Amino acid sequence: MKNLILNEKELRKKMIDLDIKTINELATKAGVSKPTIYEYINGKSPLSAAFIRLCDYLSVNPRDILIETEITPTEE
Image (tube, rainbow, N blue to C red; front, side, top):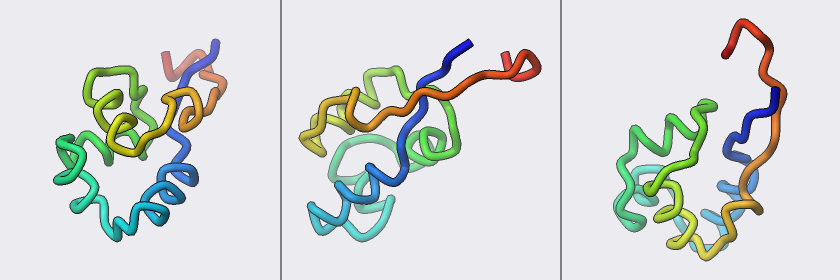
């Protein structure tokens, strides 16, 4: 089974492009809570309104910042 997760490398690139130095700064500017962003970084599926808000702030298509991974049966 497939799962979509945030591509942290792409997130960090966008942060650099926007001169955003910390997740806290990103959270404040994007209107998304810091714990939510950390959940995305740590593998929680980012398919939510908060994720769309984050992508809108970063001016990135959600598909461009997601990667597809395999889920093992014990993770389901």
